[in-house]
Length: 241
Image (cartoon, rainbow, N blue to C red; front, top):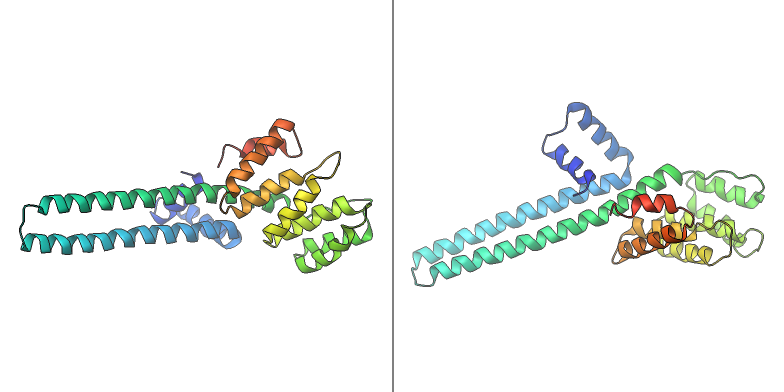
């Protein structure tokens, strides 16, 4: 179980100190990814509790009817109901751990993005148009950043940087398919330092839908094996989710 989920569970079970509770609530307000994880925890917890309550009500009603009408098969029926309830709880538990794995990869990605990609550096030597796009990105004007970066992806002199920045713009704006397309295009380019694969894995981790997590892990392993851009970070991540 992830440390993040333990932390959330400790908050709702009263295991945190007053200072820790205050820090938890501040993080919920400041960290959108963490707030989403908290909401999913509450939803899952409430769903499990409601399911178990409903099963108890149904079990009580059934057992009352069975006791009111004795028969030789009463014990068998009760045992079957217990078996069905146990199986349902196992399925819920599997779903819960699946959620934990996916939320962990999202949390890793969200933390990296927050620490490294919320603001892009203004590099010396890039074109004025690229600088304007970066400025728009840093002010979170993602539609404007997209408008400025797109034309530059078609010019050889600016294409690598523009494709990278456009992909990051789509990632920041949660346009995951467009981001993946740009990072694939970037990864296919012959560059001395190419972050395309790393950003593709990051995007898959952030989205964490379907087979995204498995694909991200495969890409991270390739990055580590070939010592591509971000291989040290990939090595830190790969066994965490």
